[in-house]
Length: 293
Image 1 (tube, one colour):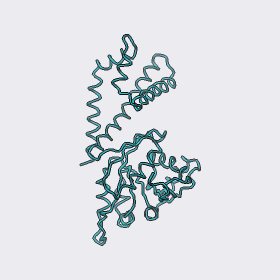
Image 2 (cartoon, one colour):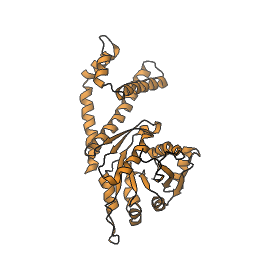
Image 3 (cartoon, helix red, strand yellow):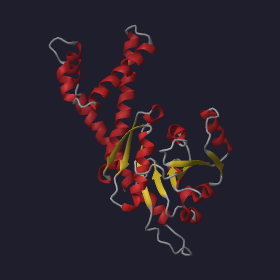
Image 4 (cartoon, helix red, strand yellow):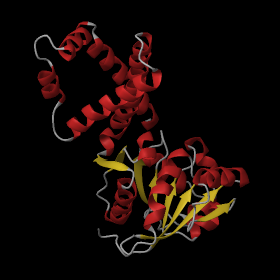
């Protein structure tokens, strides 16, 4: 990787659920020779957040540095900044003049949900009259990991960029998110659609597994077995599709005359499930696109 040996100082600005998963994945790499990161700082708002983070890591936060209520200091002393705070706090965290100045020439990676790259840039660019800089050199990469990051099975979307200034930020994002799953580089033109698709898929899988396991329990299967078997079946089919087998091919191969799976596929199609899924997915994508406006 082009970043190897660059020894960048990375600051996590906030560290929620997914931020914690990312932190846990990259921390062990700091000591490695080919790591692009030489130091990690985590900037939190208060002692309660610090206590929760330390408890979740059970004392395994070394060699990261934790700062409370010192966001500007953490950003100033960084080469790259990962925005991992709640998206509704974006104005509170980024709108100050000193913070905006501190973000100049930094590699910025944003995982703020419902927050397009243009909105992040607009907030940072909204400068006071006393500040003369224009921030034309902003380097912002938008990334959207999924909850699977907790078990290193994220399907992370990273917005493409043709800006030469953002090349290193993109490489850093690729390195970070590859540590928690697969990375997909997508155009900003369909970033929101892909986000809506990801969100809908998570909703569909959890709802389907819940419904299947509940019915299995009613038929006498212990709940822990019902959930585990159903989840493993989902994982197996997903792995087959990730290996290159199409959903159509798998349906065909599973639909031998008289087979249980073939009968189930027919019943699902007759129940108009594909139409229901199409309508629900369309609603999820429309919801995601609302944040572009």
